[in-house]
Length: 94
Image 1 (cartoon, rainbow, N blue to C red):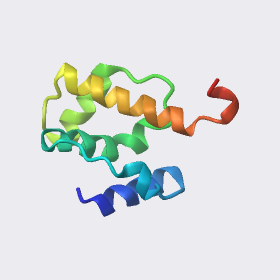
Image 2 (image 1 turned 60 degrees about the vertical axis):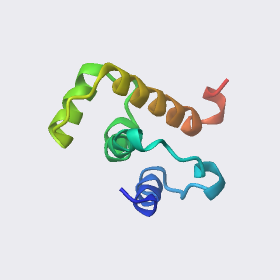
Image 3 (image 1 turned 120 degrees about the horizontal axis):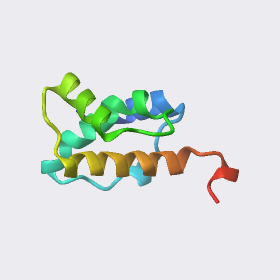
């Protein structure tokens, strides 16, 4: 997925385009697939309060035909937690 496509997906889900400075860091090539998973599945998981790792793994298998490792699931959940932290209303961030 290109950077432009990733920005478009983030803007679609959040309603605002990410600032260039916020997204200047690059993932290592070996993790690009994880970012693709995150961008593709964010619309599904953005509103959920609790994400079951087994359901996430099943969704990755169904959508991408790849079996996610425990490490990859953990990183996905970390990315999701960071996303939630950035998008919670201000009173909930404390």
